[in-house]
Image (tube, rainbow, N blue to C red; front, side, top):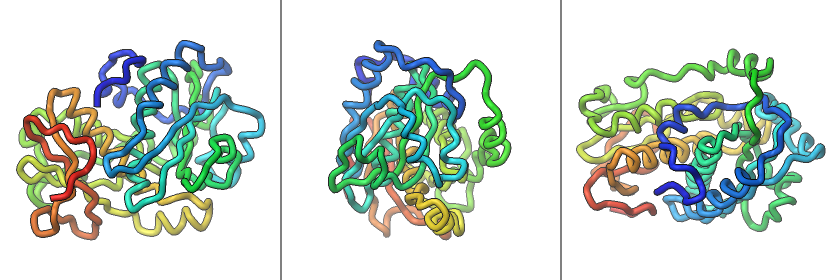
Length: 303
């Protein structure tokens, strides 16, 4: 997927490395130029790899928006956001993965423009945000707070990052594997894709759980969802939050595909048959990315 034409051609890989959950913004509104560029970019992100249609809109913040964030625990702690990125997705078996993939693309577009972002996971389908987006038979699994980062991070940023270890990520050998779950993927084996895989490691995820496990088999990179025990049930009960670990899988997919494209590697998303694909103990298979010359399919194909 190339850079949307209104977004400066800074490498997405650099944007992935720079992006962080910005919970303290200054009070400056998004400039007209940046707003136009971001709206143009997000308007082009309409269909995810699994074929789910989505739409995104950038709205300025209002005093009433804080009410829509109540009850989300730390998810709702953002100071002085200039606005919100809202997204609506159709319903389907892989709609949450598609939502994560597309929204993370919007976030990287914002990062390139120097706009800070913060994922806010929750159930917003009946919220004021849903009213603003005129939600039909769609769902809104998350919203993203946006704004120019404050010169100094506030106590909220420091407290939350200390509490959820947001500055830390799992080591490479706990996430990426070669052939099966018993063999860690070496950087030599990853070859030209190494930098993109590293950006998957550094991708954001709900509570920094990093639920993806990727197993390389030849030219295929199989994505498996290893759920955090009790995470989905606890957050649904306490906060009404959607199945964010499926959204996380879409975020990881976005990082791998955009990173691969930027490294000059072509590929496609494919659902491999059970007899052909790898497995991972205790995990659910999601999809595979196949690296090969001439393959440029954005939408998942089935083997």
